[in-house]
Length: 454
Image (tube, rainbow, N blue to C red):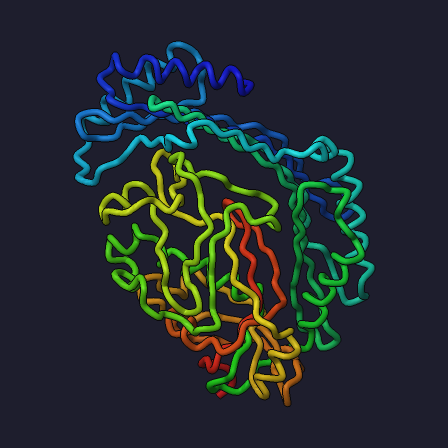
C-alpha cells in the first residue's frame, strides 16, 4: 500500500467511526522497509528484504479508549477494526482518562527526512562493502582469529496520524547500520572479543580506515587483561558504558513509572538529585542527530527540555494520560508500544564538560576506567537503582590509563552515581536508540565498589 492509499483507508475509519458510537477517533499508519545482509567467512551468510505495514485505530466511547489494528486494507478491514475497537470499549474499565488530541496551532505538519542516498542501499553495495570490512578486520593483526558477526542493514518508513479533530501529521526517516564483532587470541591463549558499529543515512560516508582504527582499539587493547584487587576506586565510566547504564535506568524518569510507584523519583521534581556538573536534556530536533522527531505518537509536538539541569530534576517525561492525572501538559513523550501508548525519550544529550578522557584520567590519579558492562538485565534493579554487574576496563595509574582488566564486578546504585559524578568529559559519542540517539561523554565518579581478586 502506498501512502495515498493508506490515507484513504484511514479517512474511511475516521468517517465511519461515529456510526459505531465513537465520540472521537484516530488512525495511525506506520510502514517499515528494511534490508539486511550478513557476511561470514568471505560469503553472504544471510539476506533479508522486507516491508511491514500496519494501521492502528483508537476511538473514545463510553469513557473508554478502544484499540484495534490491521495489516489488511480493504473495506472488510474497516468494519472489523471499528467493531473490534467498539467491543474493546465495552469490556474495558480503565479509570485513567485517555485522549484524542489536536493542537489547534499545529493541526497539519509534514516532516520528511528520507534522503536521495537511500537508493544506494542495494544487495550489491552491501555485499561489496561487507566483504571489504571482513577482510580489513582479519588483516588488522595476526592474533585476530575470526569475524564472528558482521551485518549491514538499512531501514526506512513513514508515520502518519489522522484524527476526527482535524489532526494530520506525517514524518519519515531512513538509516543505515553496520555492526561487526571479532575474536582474538593472545600469546598466552586468552581469548577476547570486541566490536564496533557505524550508522548514518549515506553508505558512501562510511570511512573504513576510521572504523578499523576504533575497531582495533576495542579488541586488541583488551588482550592480556587480568583481574585487579577488590576495593573502592575513583572510576571513569567511559562513554559507551555510561550509555549502557543510562539506557538501563532511564525509565525512572517516566511519569508512568512514578505514578505506579516504580521510581524513587516520584514527587521529587525541583529537587537536587545529581551532581551540579550533570545536565541531561532531551533534544528531539537536535541538529546533530540522524533522525529528528517533531511530534510524538499522540500528535503532541516534542520540545527541548532539561530532565536534569545542573543536578536539579527539572521534569519527568509525560504523555497525555499521565499529564492529565497531574493537571499539567504532556511533554511530547507519548510513543506507541504495540496497541498502547507508553513513554520514552527521543534524542538524549548529556552536556559535555571541558575535560578530555586523558584529563579525566589525570584527575582520577589511581583508579579504574570501566569500558563495558554486562548482565544489565539480570544484575540491575530498575526500581531501587541497585546494580551488581560484570565489567571490563583499564586500570588508571598515576593519572594514566594503563593495563586492561577483566573478571571484575562493579556494585553501586544508579541514584548514588548521579550524585557522585565529579567531572564530565568532552569525548561525546552518539549511540543509536529506539527513536533517536544518545549523545554521551565519559564521566568521573568519586568512588565505586569493585570486586576482583581477594
